[in-house]
Length: 253
Image 1 (cartoon, rainbow, N blue to C red):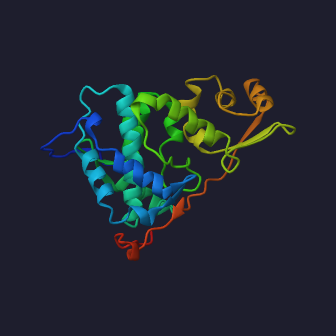
Image 2: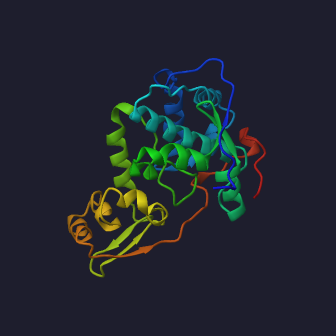
Image 3: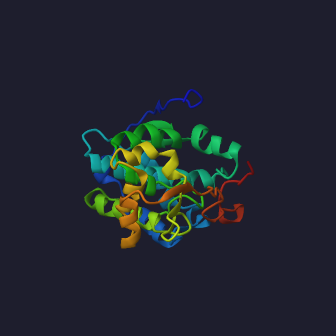
């Protein structure tokens, strides 16, 4: 998009391979502050572990990294960057806020000064993995639930499958009415339809791969549902940060 400035190169002195990123403290922060997708943002405020993790993300060298390492890294980086942006007082809750949150606010990732928009559209989507749409979390209620642990290259396929099943079978985000043959699903499936239908012939057939209810999955495979899209709730997916918790002066959009 012309309104999004392209990523800019950063000066990095000490590059860090993905395998050498210190992940234990980041996992602890997620485990302590993310419960069933609800994020306790004050728990990330003034956290040296979080600051250190962001610095390592800035200095990560992906040269020679495997596809799984790159996918895991950028997914974790996106989620950490979104948290950082919330702590700084940004919010995607309004139209203007979304423009700033996704397209103007820049983050230091793998030696680049880059927006969340480019992280998703220029770094993650070209890897042709539709399930990242259930793993990256933009801090909003209708986003996928933030996981309580990081994504890891050695078990990434299992983690992405779990994220897909959790999202698609969550009645707050997707609802399947078998008797009426109507499916009310997340607009994520509308926004990124080309990613999902690149793997299956239709959205219905893609959904059938992950729906838990056998009768619903069977009807979806037969394209027997009328697909409708739910409204998107851009409200915050957790407890907001505060100056008292040591966060940086939260502000309104």
